[in-house]
Image (cartoon, rainbow, N blue to C red):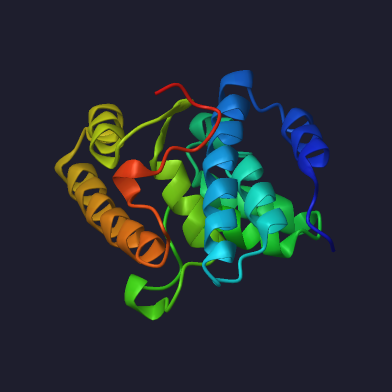
Length: 183
């Protein structure tokens, strides 16, 4: 099946009772993801921009459900999208927290990596540094030593992901300023 367009993604979010603040977060992740996909394509890295946009818009479709039910929102979101025959989008959503493969298995970034990275640059609806984003994540979710260790590992992996994404682009990560944000 073809990737759902923005209107269909927003309908799906509404049908699954995703609150407005999460929808706005997803829109922000989609802005960053789309610009990275465009830059990747310009650099000769083939990335499906429609898949990136749909994956970014739908990445937190199960966030509230899993807050209430204490489940893995990436896995639950992927299950939901697979049930709608959106298998490629489901794969991106499933990997938006943790990629399926180790980073050294990626010769170039793919759609899931782009959405995963973009999500780590958005704090609520603001585009922020990785340091600021992970400081926030540690404050909000680092209530145990295991959680802190998990987030610290995720931070290190995200920095490696950033290096892999930007090493072929004509912009440095600290100079990348996606449109649609206040700086």
